[in-house]
Image (tube, rainbow, N blue to C red):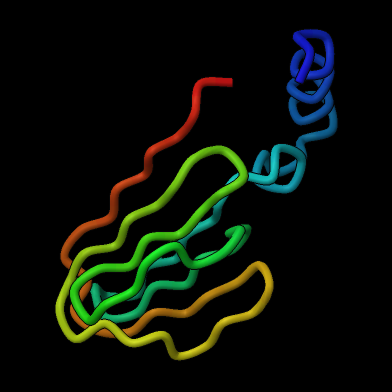
Length: 95
């Protein structure tokens, strides 16, 4: 993505007071009490086990660690995870 396009998007977000996750396609995470995690704007499941989930994102990856993890719902860009969620790691790309 060119420098001009990035600056234009940032200006658009600031000027129109738009949420950055919509314009930049960033992930949005909603954690409910360490028991349920709702993730939007993912690109697919890379790895899943009852202790770990790895998702591909448009700009990096996301790792969820815990125990008894279960995928309760999965849609093309949304996923709901339940279980004991102990850690979340975001590995973004520099862009």
